Each structure stands twice: as structure tokens, then as C-alpha cells.
Length: 173
Image 1 (spheres, helix red, strand yellow):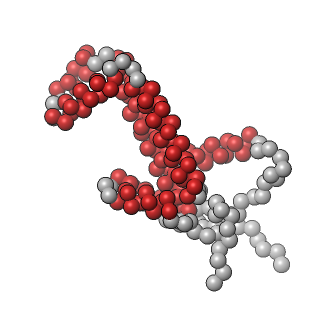
Image 2: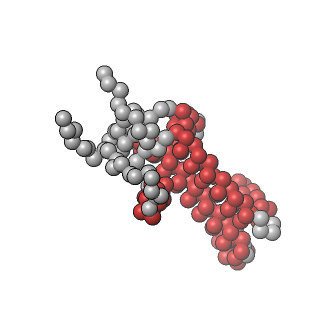
Image 3: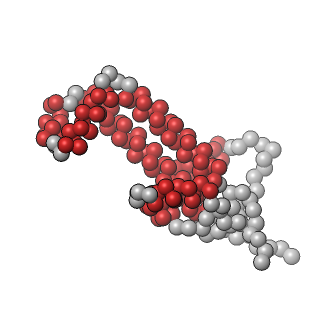
């Protein structure tokens, strides 16, 4: 008896040959794309990598002379509700500080995006909608969701988001 293939099955790849450039490109696209599923270990390791690299980049950007003091002074003004400095931002803040501050913000936002993408894939692994990742922006609930993403097992076998990353088949009833 021949079983028809479904769109959920991944084609078998010859593992005796090294990965082609197309395979490497596909893996890179999968890292930045919210489609598909990933295992708990991949979720954990990818997030470690994302935040490790962003910490190095932000640390480098902060290493500029007096950059930390500059950011602390800005935070202090903002905490006091004194926003008058924004009217003269271009004249009172040297370009080097502004540019580094913008790069720090961009690095953080990009890291946040990549981390959320990995969370969406974990949710997909559990056959849940990726929009649940928005709960990460709610205090306390984000801690619970983080633990859930880290420790909850994914759906056995293929689901509507793709094949099982562990290669398991559904349990028979």
C-alpha cells in the first residue's frame, strides 16, 4: 500500500554529502523567519546566542569614553520628567554619542525581534498561534510564558506549522 505524501513531510536529504549552499541559505532564512517549528534546546541555544552577541555589541558601543555616564544622565532627566533637552538634542549632544545611542537602540530592537521569532517557533511547535508571543510584553505573564516555552514539550508528529523537529510520529490512539 502506497501512502500519499502530504505537504507536512520534509523531503529526505542525502546526509552522506555536505550541505549545499541552498541548505545553508534555508537554515539562515529559518533563523530570521517566524515560520516553522523548533525544539526546546534550539530555542534555548538560539536565545543565548542572540543575547550574547547583542551584549558584546552593546558593550562595545558603551565602551566609548563617558558613554555610560551620558546614558545615566539621560535616564535621570527622563525619570525626573525633564524633557526640555530634547528641544536642543542636536546642539547639546555630540554626534558620536547620538550615533552610538541609536546603534544601541537598534541592536536591542533587533535582538528582541530575533528572540520573539524564536518564541513564535516554539509556540508553533506546541501547535499554538504565534500571536501568543505578545504576552511577553505583560509583566509576570512573560515569566510564566518563558518557562512554558522552555520546558513544555512540542506536539508529536507534524502539525499545521510543519514537521516535528524531533522527527517523531504521532502516538496511535
